[in-house]
Image 1 (cartoon, protein in one colour):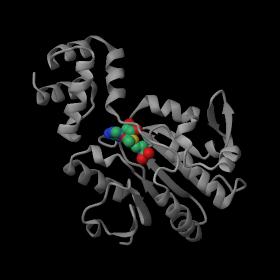
Image 2 (image 1 turned 45 degrees about the vertical axis):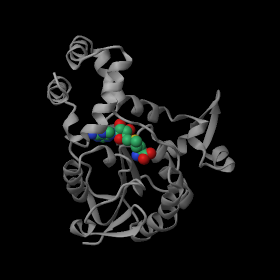
Image 3 (image 1 turned 180 degrees about the horizontal axis):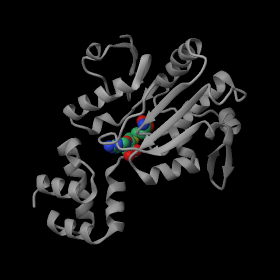
Image 4 (image 1 turned 180 degrees about the vertical axis):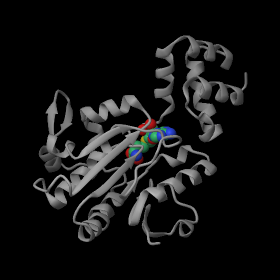
Length: 261
Ligand SMILES: C[S@@+](CC[C@H](N)C(=O)[O-])C[C@H]1O[C@@H](n2cnc3c(N)ncnc32)[C@H](O)[C@@H]1O
């Protein structure tokens, strides 16, 4: 069995569409993974996957690359705090919807929730805003729900903010309920599940890099449908939206686009 055949059989077995991800990168990762178990062929590994649900879950968790941290890319978060969120809050007094797509363990989403808390406080009505956070990986979503983080993910959080928004649990830090309660976590596959709608701000950061260009275009089209007029779309700082004018977007700051049409 070669990689192409493995991809197809695996999609049939699990519903996970490896074909939408960049081949070279993914194939290399999978080969390393299999070799570490001293398995020498796709056939043997596929047999193992077929026979063990536990292995299927372990492999699916491995496939999703979950690297994240609080306020990852400080400059982008500075612009979200000083420009993007104030503009939205000024313009819309109710039902502001933020979607953090590919949220991993929630560090990105809680960073946003902290910013909203800082901008408008805790006393606001529940209908003023909500933050929806989604990921394909059930394991990271469990961690996100728990909101318990190793301190190395908080390098970009000041001592004062750590004390204000977290409490210590053993050698980790847990997010406080007032920051957590504004966030709804959901399992969602960007490749096949229905998208959110009426979003004023969408973050899909450091997720597109793993997809093939043609997949990226398909996902962008769906994100644009999900975005309200004047809404913002934010990518990772090493990603970009090619021909963003074609999507009715204007580039506002590094990695930050606004829907102007
Ligand atoms: C590198 S992390 C990015 C986390 C966060 N957005 C950030 O920038 O710090 C990429 C995330 O995308 C998720 N992901 C990969 N494929 C996905 C898919 N098809 N649908 C939804 N999420 C996906 C992974 O599970 C992972 O948590």
